[in-house]
Image 1 (tube, helix red, strand yellow):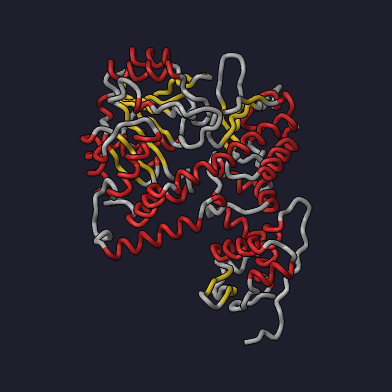
Image 2 (cartoon, rainbow, N blue to C red):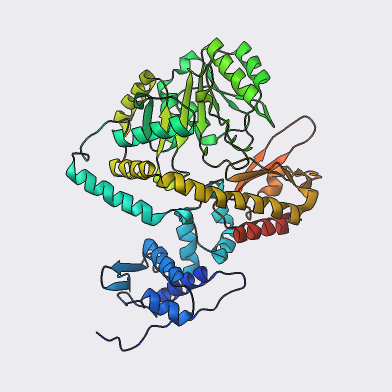
Length: 490
């Protein structure tokens, strides 16, 4: 059927705004205004690309993004249409964007990032960019094909019934090969349990451990959800000092002389939140103390894949005297936090106890997701994707460091982290002298930096740091974030 009129889109680009962002916003605005009505057939990607003089791939990506948000719908062999049921139609486009942010959808493009950085409410939930991966880098086509193969596989074999609470054999075997080949470990599948992210592994570990056997020791600045998990399972938590080399072993020895310790929780590869790596001599000493005093070491290796300047230091679980190590890792950072897939490695007896706890709360994980990820790991696609995004994140780290020096000069200080997706920035000199104001009061109305604020009291000064997650921001978005932050403080 010949269309009576060709749908045309008018693009009015703002300064610094990408074509992708302009086109996405314009189509959404035309739908909100009623110009493009529900059921309306959109121009083909080739037609619209020719009309606008842009790359067809850009149009396809915009259509896919708007489909994921519910604005458009694709009908096989027919075309792309405006959805019959629109998301939050009563809201303005500007508020719709903020709603999608609050629901966890990371916006695409500079103009939306600018709105994010100027929104106090959006930054109240600072963990949205505390070092998270960029979901725009997800290999959607690879992932979708893997999911399709997994669904076919489940239809041919009895995978969708109740299975092993420790995870599918396919994924545990893939994890075993990765850990043994890439992480220098030597484990069997009986030592591996698949979980829904590292937080679940932390909670289950503390659930299985006995709080009557002693306290839980964490670093002075540590991952708050982990501390909350320990306390919810009955542990008294004691904080150990840390410095530029990570966990202070001498202070840990003092704690051991005064308390019975059941476990030590640490993030040795890239310490959270300070990003430093635990030195090898301290790693070895920690494991020696673990053997001597009989406490468990919970090693949260949450972003091992993203190490840039040298070969990653082997995990604690690979070193001598590591029999008491509970190794925790995550696959979510490789793709996206919402994938909710992690793993833990320990003695078979401990893993079996964890599996018993899983049957009480979740029975087992998502079989289709586990089979899909196992497929990608076996084919080498996961490793290929990691290599690709590692280069992107390293470039973003270097750009963030360069922009900090350009914008702030010597008014802020930081150490360039060897890896990870965040910078740990000391902004004390921007806030001195404090006078009668506490630093937290001065920072309470600074909604423009994507990150978390941390305060550490010492005898003479109060160093104030922010953890700035650069991973989920493009280089242009990083510049905007830091310039707006400077405008608030300088």
